[in-house]
Image 1 (cartoon, rainbow, N blue to C red):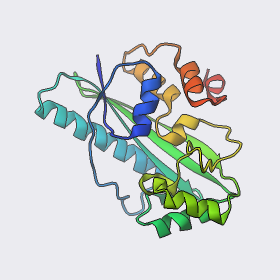
Image 2 (cartoon, rainbow, N blue to C red):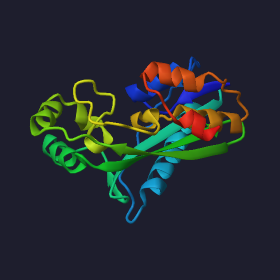
Image 3 (cartoon, rainbow, N blue to C red):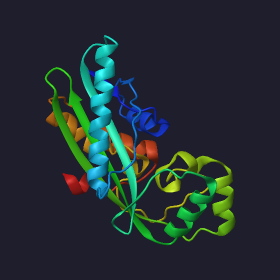
Length: 218
C-alpha cells in the first residue's frame, strides 16, 4: 500500500526516512490558526485530520493511486494551555525563547492515518515534557539571527546542533521533532499494515538518542 506523507517538513521527511519505508510527499497547506477556546490537544488532532483529508482529496483530484495518507501536527504548549505556534518575527522568537528558558513545557504531536480505500481514519497523540536549559542571551540572539526559529513551533528545533536548547530529555525525541515513530508504528498496525519491529532501533540510531519510550509502551 502506498504511503503518502501530507507534509513538506524536512524534519518529518527525515524521520520517516529512518524507517526504510517507501513514501511519497503529498503536502496540504491549511490555516493553522487555533479556534477560540481550543485546547492544545484538540487543536493538533483537528489540524492533523484536516491535513489528511485535504491531502487525500488532492490525490484523488490528481488521479493518484489510493493509499494511506499520513498527516501530523505538532505544537508547543506553555503552562499547560498556551499554544505556541511559529513566531511572526525575530522579536517574537526572542521573547518566546526567553519565556521557555530554564523551564519545562509540553510538546504535543497528533498523527492521523487516512485509508483511502474505505475512508477509515486512525489517529492518536503523543506528548513529551521538554526541559529547556539555561541558555544565555547571546545564544538566543545568535540562534534567532540564524533564521532557524522562524518556521518552528515554539521558536526552536530540538535537534539544532549550534543551539541545543534542551537538556536531560526523558521522553520521545522524535515527537519533539514532529513525528513520533513508535506511535506511527501502532497506527499502521491498527490500519492493517505490518510496520516491522525495527522502528525503535532505527529511530534511536538515526537520532543518536537512547530513548526510554519503547520499553515503556511494550
